[in-house]
Image (cartoon, rainbow, N blue to C red):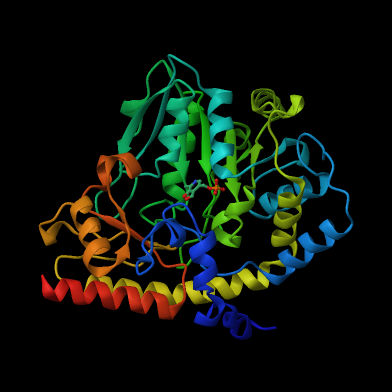
Length: 396
Ligand SMILES: Cc1ncc(COP(=O)(O)O)c(C=O)c1O
């Protein structure tokens, strides 16, 4: 099957709305009114790759579903290590820990390197999970404001935030919610500060396979041995492969010492923590056999990105650019004269489209004046949602 054919998986026939209304939670179909279209949480509306269904079905039909290894199935960890290796990260299966999602991986990584009295640096805006996990570990979080508009890390903005208690820098690449793919020179600046001040880098790369433009994805852990050793890479399979409900992700530590610390705090050796074996089988199949499906998905997303960004940008008071990575639009809506929370409320009640408002609790103060919309849906649904927003905008 070539990419053009596999793109058929992403037509409106592929989107089962009645089933989504039953099964898609987390602010999506099952949690909004029956006539509301949700462009909220970043979770694809499409069924997973057929190869994943086959792998899970075959595993279940063998009938043995007992305990797996505490750190994860060897085959899963090998598959993840090879994937990271292809991305230039010096990786070893023994330094991979299977987790129940990228969010859980972030939480464990933060607990391994941060504690009360420590400080961690992250960005503003950024997905709430990064500061949340650092704070939950007991650390104080300092935020570096990204360049409004471009989302760049401003030159010289990070170092003044580093103090004697700073232990870690948390990055998100590609960046949620701006959709920016971090440039090599930005990553090099982060890496050299981490080396200079002896910090751990926690890199959330859950979006790393959704690259839509020409800017290449560079993992910070690939920037040389010294930075690799102090990098913890976390990721998962929710965004690229639609496996959010299986709660599957991983942590990769750049050195054995960090890996054993992560393992210890995770609770996996005492079986109080761990990833479902079935979910690991699904993720393994996704990496090994789901690449054609992923190419088809990317092909579809590039089309949605172009259509959606242009139509959002044409709305009165909206400014929207095409994201380089992720499937998230993050338009600046300040010229509408409405606050993001007010605008999101209006869209849900009047246009019957749910979006995520740029609010401090979701992405930080730097997200105010923006809304976030996911476009991992069919062209038909995206078109319907945009038409409703356009109609609302004209009627204002
Ligand atoms: C940056 C980031 N990290 C982590 C997650 C959560 O991933 P998972 O479903 O694997 O826990 C998300 C989901 O939106 C995300 O955007």
